[in-house]
Length: 485
Image (cartoon, rainbow, N blue to C red; front, side, top):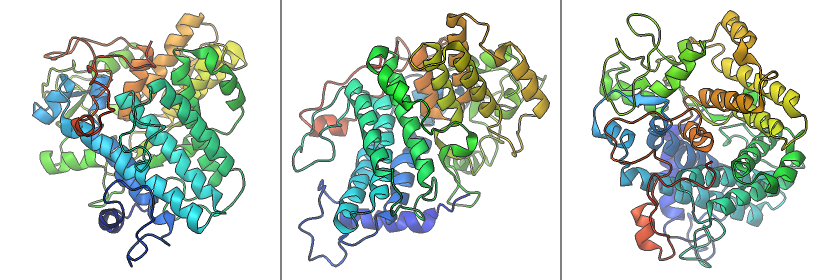
C-alpha cells in the first residue's frame, strides 16, 4: 500500500497553491523575481495534491451521497447533511466544492505539470502522458456530474477568461481524444512521476491500461446514444491493454492511521463513536441481490436481527438495524480506497459492446467478458475480513447468473447491466452513472422527495453562473444527461 503522506504533503501544497496559483494564470511567466516561484519545481511534487485534493477528496467527501441517487445506499440518520441530498436538495457547497476540485485543484495543477515539464524537461514525455490521462479522467468525472462544462476553452484564462461551455457529447469525445494524445506520450519509456504517483508508483504499462479503460468508458457512454459514431474507435481499442484484472485497478489507498483514513470512515468515528449508524443498504440494490441469492450480500451488508438482508426504502431515514441491513464496517474501513477504474467496470463495458456488435466476437465473446466481470467483482474483497468464500463464488458462477450464453440479447443485456450495477458498490459516482445510463434496475419511489423524478445531474455552481457570462441557464436536477437512454 502506498504511503499517502497526507499530513506533510497536504500542508505543503496548501501553502504552495496559495503562492503559485493565486488568480487564474495558466502560465508561469512574469514571476521570475519571486524566489519561491515554480520555475524549477519537479512536477512530481504536484501529483499528490492533484490526486488527493483535486480528485479523491471531492469523490469521498462530497460525492458519497451519490450512492443514494443510485439507490445503493439509503441514509438512516435523519440529519440535514444526509436527508437533503437523498430527498433531492443538493447543497450549493457540495456543487461548488466539486467544481473547485475539478478545475482549480486538479485541472489547473495538471496544466502546470505539463507547462513545467515542457519548459524544464521536455524529453519527459511520460509525465505529459500521466497529466493528460488525469485530465481526461477529471473531465469525465465532472461531466457525468454536471453535463455541459468548459472543455475546449478551460484553464486558458488569458485567451478565454470567460470560457464557453461544451456540450456533454463534445466533452466525452474530447476525453477520448485526450487519451489518444496521452497514449502517444506513453509509447516510449522516458522520465515519469514515480514517488509522487500514489496510484501506480510510476509504472508506465499500468498508466496505459488506465488510459485505455477511461477511453472505453467515454466511448460506451456515447454509444448509449450514437453507437455508429464510435464503433470504429471501439474496435480499434479491443486488444489494447486495459484494466481487466483486480490487480490492474486504478485506485488511491487510504491508510489506517489518523489523518490518513478514508473520510467516510472518519465520519463514523467522529460522530458515531465507531458505530455504523448512518448508512443502510438501499432497497433497490438489496432486493436485486436477494432475488439472485447473491453471495456478495455478506461482503456488503450486515444481516438484520432475524437473519438475512433487507434494504431500506429511499428517503425513509429510519435508524433500525433490526429492520434494515447496514453497510458493513468491513467495507467502510479506514483504508477503504477510492477506486477510479476497476476490472468489473471494464469487463462489463466490453461484454455489452460485444453483445451489441460494437466489437467483434458476438455473444460468445460477450459471455467471456461477462464472466470475467462477475469473477473480478466476486474477488474484490479477497484477503479481507469480508472475502466471499470460494464455494459461494463457484455456486454463483454455476447458477443462471453466471453466464449469458443461452440468453436472448435483451435478457443478456439486462444481466450485464444488473451485474455492472452490483459491482459498482462503494463507487458512488460510478454507480449513479450506471443506473442513469442503463435505467437498470428500475428506480424505486423516494419518500419525501422534493423532486418530480430522479436526480440526473447537479446544477452548475452559483459561483460559476454569476462570474462567467457564458455559463448556460441552470438545468433542473431531473433533466437527463446526454448519455442516458
